[in-house]
Length: 269
Image (tube, rainbow, N blue to C red):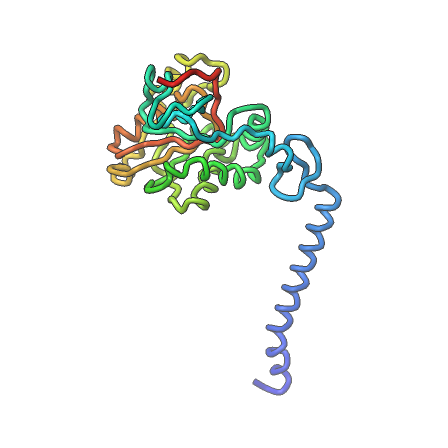
């Protein structure tokens, strides 16, 4: 190293550090300017909000599902009938999955959140929705081996660019420490949208639509799996998923969703 090049070589690391600091400062200023010019608005009421896209007032309007509820389906009861008493729905039409839990009722605010996540690219809502799901599904997640999001068919996934169930699953995985396994279950048949179909039509629509990937059979056998989805309506989709996993010898399959449709309350049996 001669006397001319030595100062240049020693100066390069300092120059790179200075340029990196300038870039970071510029990025921060640009973000601040964008936040001032285009403040984040609550997805429900459109008021400015500092945080994750939903203001405190709108979160307060959500109907969170708390005990007492059916231990199998997670349907809320209007009074506490005592431990382990099942709802009429659980007795009349028991599902393939062991248990289901939901964070909130599928009311007006929940519908806006789900539609924004699903159809409007609002993946920024997934972290806070997933946190409430992890809270609601603590008993399912305790001891679970894997989280499996309900898969989209590749054609629908290509058009939508992401799977909303996968986005929620990633958030639940971060909260719970349970590993997300999006590779275990696949949708092998394209199906119609479930919206507008009757209960029997929904069940027929998804029959045989899901399959465990043949190369992943060993990862399913003997495992306790929690299916993740955004909304539970009749349960036809998650039931079809659970049957596919149970055929692959899963030890137990449960269901965790953000919201569930709750009909007029009926007394437990």
